[in-house]
Length: 143
Image (cartoon, rainbow, N blue to C red; front, side, top):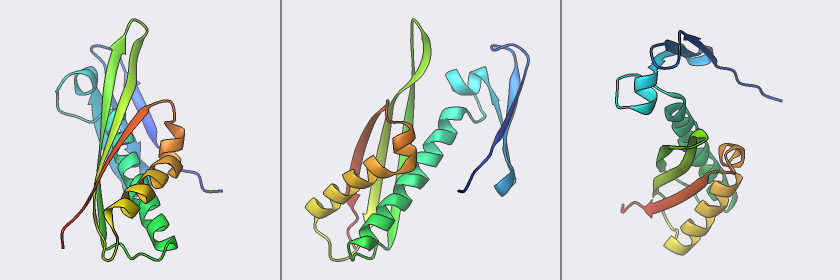
């Protein structure tokens, strides 16, 4: 079984502190703060990393599913937008929007939509985020 690991460190209190998130397999390190998470300040945040993971996972799941059905995708470009909301209990991820554009010959839109919905349901990141409203918009790119 494959395992993946990332590391985060946070120094200080919530509002004035700062942290670093690192992923050793790709030599990535990003700074994050309260402002980069809850406001529009420079830096990364956990939700941005979830968005990247979900976009990558969905694209791979769709590619694999298409190939298993005899299609040959040339390119799948997915953007995931994670919405962080707040209520009386605190912050939570309320929605993830997957927008994908697919370059693939010899497929009709109805088949693509159906397979994309199946990929969304079965990608491991979607499964991990099953309690979140995940919206999918997929478009067949004109060749």
